[in-house]
Image 1 (cartoon, helix red, strand yellow):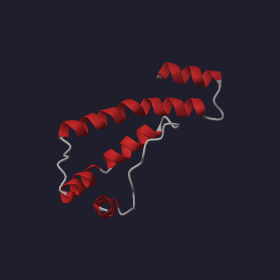
Image 2 (spheres, rainbow, N blue to C red):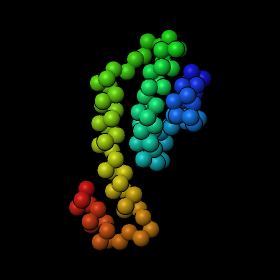
Image 3 (tube, rainbow, N blue to C red):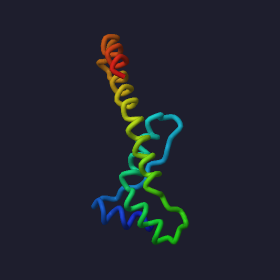
Length: 97
């Protein structure tokens, strides 16, 4: 409830956090990206709730680093999973990666 209010004010949309799904490897990346996107809202909601949980700048930096580390994997897997992907595109993708 706290988070929803800040997200609506900040983004103008009703976004919620994404939960990780074991059967979809890339749901972790989507989950972390959304969490990082709502960083300001998360901090405000935690303060309003009176929570002792606080994220330091170092922790937010580590989350951003994790996102940047996983994005090339997502791009490579997306390229390999395209319907028009061939052995040549697979080889090129893997060499690039």
